[in-house]
Length: 396
Image 1: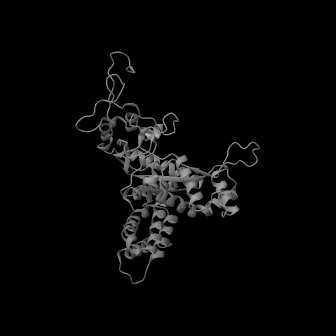
Image 2: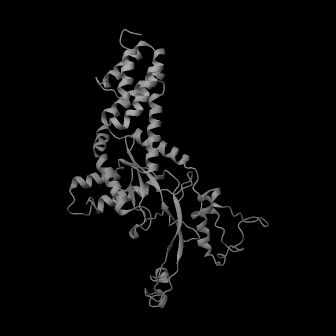
Image 3: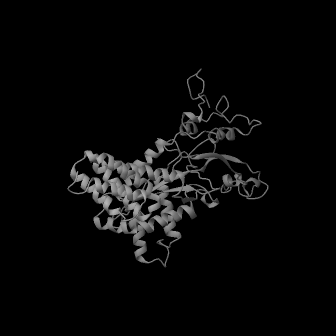
């Protein structure tokens, strides 16, 4: 094979810092000068191993753009009336997707075209979930014990099995839309190895001209050949499902009632079945971790974004009152956790509301009155008393 560039032009060999997906898919630089075979192995490992190690040692870049993309997807899912949750790769598990993509490593890897990170296509999430419902929960059409209504639910969620029904009478599209599962932070990558022990059997075992020959027999004399591959070793992904647009109101209402059970089923499929390639060997197992640092940061960013949208166009004084009302609600639920923030908000409001109109002062007074406790000498109660004295109805 000739060099696929103009004569005299050196083959570029950029590092993954340029773009992980671009370098992985387009710039495998371990060929010999004629692009006929891989360069000779070195004392530091095979050519394939050396290529993968570039990604293994790569420092994680800033993940702000991943969070911004996730927030946009969450907003879209919320607007459609769907659900989302964050799941993390289980400890000691690895994840790989896109192994069938052609690549000199013999195992491809799927990169998001704009996020430059691994992801799970929505079609893969849909296939996993359908398989889980069919096999684990008995929704399969071939299961004789499966009630007709369960089979109807399966068709309602995912659509008809065949999309080429000649009559067209029984074909329908599913009510659920599965979004691509995207990382909320740059995942850790590492080299993994798979070792086929009977490679020639898998290549030639079904060839009638090879039957009976030593290389085409599944036996223990075959030479195992380690094949390095790139996998994800740590990472957290946003999984999202929403109703298909255009559904009738009664269909949307039915799905709204089913979301809690559907979310649990999808989470169980990720936990016990796994997504991606090689799930039979434990790859691709995810669990939901709402308390993780990244998950907490994403939820906080989401709430902040939602608050910004809700406050758009509101007067400043109304925004302050809404925040105090929210803190008071939390204060009634968990006084210890919200006490300091509420006290600070009340003290600040006492200073600035002197310049606002009487209607807003009256609303602030009512909020302070709702938490006033006679005889209480706590800081929050003192702040409420000051507001009640300063902005009592009829007083300035």
